[in-house]
Image 1 (tube, rainbow, N blue to C red):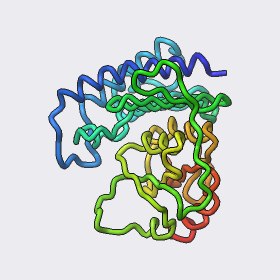
Image 2 (image 1 turned 120 degrees about the horizontal axis):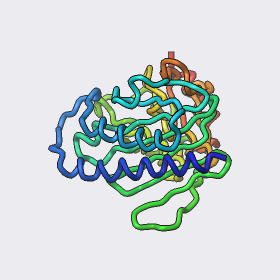
Image 3 (image 1 turned 180 degrees about the horizontal axis):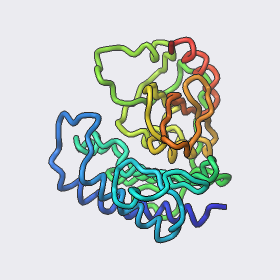
Amino acid sequence: MYERELQTALEAVRLAGEYLCGAYANFHAIANAPASITTEADRQSQEIILQHILRNFPDDALCAEEATSSVRDRARTGDRLWIVDPIDGTRGFAMKNGEYSVMVGFVEKGNIGVGVVGQPATSRLTYARQGTGCWRLDGQETEPRPCKVTDVGVLTQATLTQSRSRNPKQKSPYLDKLQPAKVVESYSAGIKLALVARGEADIYLNTYDAFHDWDICAGHILVTEAGGQVTGIRGETLHYGLADAWQRQGLLGSNGKIHREAVKKMTEAVP
């Protein structure tokens, strides 16, 4: 199931990645890029992805971050829905620190069938199809390797990944509760969810009040197919394909073994 959708998503991410490598090389870095920044590269990448999807699945609905021509007059929700973030972590792209990804997810009747997260700057690709596990293909590799979450069972031994701190000098009350052994930061949610799926981090914490389906959909299935768990920060089930595409529950993505403890601590910490 969803093999054709997976191949379409992989090719779309490859095509967008090729374009973005050139755009990234020629981009003049913006040292203090704002969180709200968007670039022409975002829009071009999105059109590359959506046009490839439409060539293969012309009747499917499209939910994507940028207001480009391919989405303007199309259904944004439906039984078969593609959820696209053409540059996840545009600040990382604009600052040229490599922390950006391309994310393509496919959802059928609310269930994620496919997720692909490509990292053009570092030549890392992580992908999953429902029921077939999570896989990685990096650099010049020609054979994919399976991804598996870690076996860490205690939060105080865990590596936590989160968004780059707005104020590095201000300690997070959420980290005070979780007390991880190590913190890894990135601008891209796709990168952070891939880190958990690959076993390179144990838990991803997102406490933003609101974000969108395209920020997490493709990465969500990576973690679950690698053996982990993804919920809202209080353990809520996350839903995709609603009319406004908003996510308002925060996000915890983990190896599953520390998930219950993390949810308990976050429930205590979040008003």
